[in-house]
Length: 314
Image 1: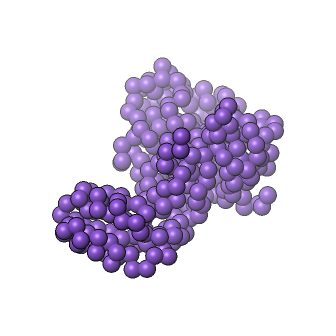
Image 2 (image 1 turned 45 degrees about the horizontal axis):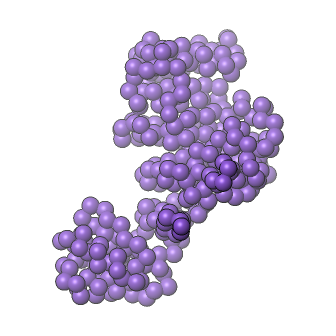
């Protein structure tokens, strides 16, 4: 494994009976970067993370995480990583301070430095005034800050975050991400899962998962430049009628409505997609403005997963 790669996975697979949760996933996560897993619920994000931190044993494939081979003895790996689950997993009936003290004891953080480290985290994650509050009494955003503080208390080299902002408001999410960028700049490698497009755009690199398989991988810019689709934006007086028309156009792969706008994806090999869309709408007497536009990350996601998210044949 290269020195600048923190996680290297090859053919990582996890089956539960006849169900394949993760299907032969390859990964290369670079050091000091934020690497995102983007995908809907059930796409294998959480299962992948649990395998990479040693909580689940792969059915097939291997991974090298910080020099530790998985499957294998992961005891030496655990002190070097921080793990934050999707749901709040700390002690709701303990105070903020007690939770931090407990985690410090779990990781055998040096007693001489423990108090200063806890005070540093309370201040950094705006928890100073909540030190004596029960964790269960705090807002979703405050609980996630506490969970992050506990996950980084022991200065982990690698931070694994499973949909860390799924229960917080937009402002708390922005503040949470500011702290993630600060950690990455200081050298911490971060692997996180999300189903938010705006969060995915903030990652240095992304893997898009669908039904357990990796269907795309690259920087957000690389992915947007390699959709294999042209994007036609439609602004119609009646978007619902326009979508019904375009759903029947053979050349249109898929149509997504965003407010009063539609975004139609047409394979790159089909010439003049703008004209195709305009003529189809005009033939059905749907009044609309039509223009080509640049792909968004959501367009990338739709294009990458459109063939894997359809219902399976009976």
